[in-house]
Image (cartoon, rainbow, N blue to C red; front, side, top):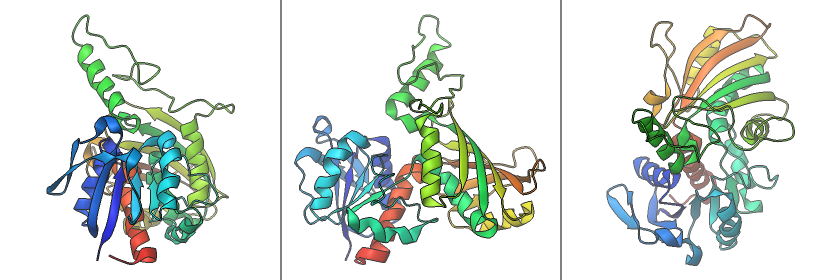
Length: 340
């Protein structure tokens, strides 16, 4: 006996990826409903070897459905998630709306699976920000061994994190650079993204941090340990898919780079590719379509007593969004609902 699963936002980048991953991982489903806004009604989407026609999110009855994976943004989630939850359908939400709600668990299954039992307060589970998700998978096993005191992270985030319009803008701007008179003015971003990097993701806050940077700080504390100090600089780069991060950690106990490498090799969800030679590391292009988060460039930070540096790369549409949501669904089924 399997589950009845709803995917909300099935025509978007993340929604389509959710359907792909549900099929790839052979999630035990009896029925799948693909929901979208009215303007996308009837659009066909793939689920394994099946084709689904999207249904209208606005009129859908969630009664009798086990879980709903939401990828529709905070505004729409605010309207529809309580409706689904009230109908008895557990919501796994990819937006930022519920991440900081103390009554809603924020889960990365490799890090804090026990938090799943907190879902019952609102019948909602939150999926973390894409940049946070891949980082905490690497932080957690190191924290368990040597207790991380401080994290300094700089991100190199792909345009797919901003959606299809941003991907189109990078493509069009890149082409326009080579055709006189075909230059494309920025719309998705405040400045040109083609052949450029932009040190702003989301809006600026009073502290001078952007909201993306604040998310990484707050979510890491909620998922891993509230005592960890985190400072982040988040940068948008002209890459279509795949986020990269340069991470520096300071631990309470000394952790040798070789031991750290072995810990990361054995940790769930991680693959270590770390050869000290040209090309002996993973780049965003190579991680696309993969479930794993890749770790490279592990080395001691000799400027402090207990410091390590490493490079972290992951497909942001997968581990940063759709894959983590499906993993939460698997955890929910295995630990709580126990039907599949």
